[in-house]
Every structure is written in C-alpha cells, then in structure tokens.
Length: 306
Image (tube, rainbow, N blue to C red; front, side, top):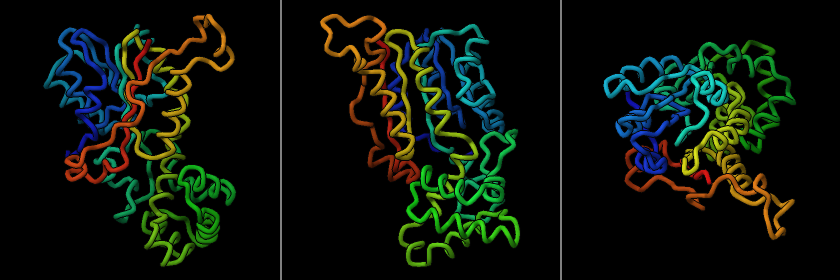
C-alpha cells in the first residue's frame, strides 16, 4: 500500500511529543503520522480516528507491529470529544489533523480521481449513504451551482450545473469520465484544457459528499478545548477553503476578545486560549515537492494551549 505522508517530519515536530503524553491522530489514514507518534510514546497513549474501514484494517497491522499503546476508533473526527469521553479521556497533549485525501483513496476505484474512468462514489466512509452519484443526479440546478462555486471556487459553475441537469435527463451520470465529458461540453475545450475545472468540480463534490468543511468548523474549537496547557494542535490543509477555516479559528482563539480588548484587566474567560506557534503556515520543502507532487498545496498551522 503506497502512501506518502505529507509534511511528516514537520507535523511530528509540531506536536512536541512527550513520552508519557496522550495524543490523537484525528485522521489516521494509512498510519504514516500515527506510527511516528507511537514510536515516541513509551508510557503514553495514542487514539487514532478514521472513517475509512480499509485504512483502519491496514493501519491496525502497521501500529500493532510497533506497540500496543493505541486504540483506533472508527468514526469521523467530528465526534472527537464524544468518542474520547467514552474512553474516559477529557484532556490530551497533542492532536494532529491531516485533512487531505490519502494517496490510496485517490488510487482506489472510488471516483475521487478524474484521471481514470471509475464509478462515481467519493465516500470516505463506505457505510455512509450519500454518494457522488446522488449529488449529481438528485441535486437541483441551484444546489449544484452553489456547491461548485462555494466548495470548488469554479467561475463557470452555472454552465457546468446546467449541463449536468441536461445530461442526467437522458441517463444518470455514473462515472468519472462521463462527468469530465459533461464539464468539457459545458465550458468548451479552450477553458477546459487551460484551467482544468474538473479539479474544482471533483473537489466540490467530494466536500459535499463527506461534509468536510462543516466537520472542520465544528471540530477545531473542540480540539482546542481538549488540550492540556502546553499541548499542541497541528493541522495540515490542502486547499484554500480548509486553510481559511483553520486560520480563522486559530486567530479567534489566539486573540483577546474584541469586547474587552481595551480593559486594563482582562477577565479570565476572555483571554486567548492558544498562541500561534507559526504565524505563517509551514509548506513542503523542495525535496518533498520533488518526491511527491500531491503535497504542492499543503499548509501546516500549529497552536499551543496556554
């Protein structure tokens, strides 16, 4: 199983791992980060979350060969606090989020990639009901246009949504190449081959199917609340929409509330909860980019609990 872990060295360093600490890998994937965390905790414990059962099965083998000081939880990371409370855990020393789709997910026949002809699915959790086909074949023109523009930041969203609605009247849209052909017809060859709108459209559908941005918005404040003083939260994002949410949440919790900013004495509940470890995001080195082009857009942001 070939999987390249983006910004691995930087994200592990970001956590400032203590050998007796409790850590959370909120996006286990294929255990690239989790295995490095587990190697460093001799008396601590690791909780790892993922909703992809294939990733969990693979990672179980990897982690069990290192140590038994871990537990994998089959769940979306939006249930982080609840699931940890069920384990009797209310505070942790570090949490890592790697928000990207893993290389194996892109390479499997799930319709994440527009590079091959695959069935349109895009579910990260195969137990979820909504698929990419459901979105394309049941959403209204207005809903599709909004998703493509909001989640894909695609300028020609209206043209593409209109063409999808016309195409599905003849037959349901079921494969990646069918969708690519529809996008090409909607925008014309010149725009298609120059700007590659299929990237934006596939991203938008994937975000909608997996409810990705809403989950990030929900979980980051919870993750900050879970940290012990000195604990670190590290987040790797892969596109501007994710990074904007991370930046906004980190800014909010690292600044004094505007309501009380001018007061000589700031009440405890209005003081910042975290400090920014890096004001500018950490990006992959040239060496990493040469090894793995999929890491091009990655950004790592880190905060520490005060």
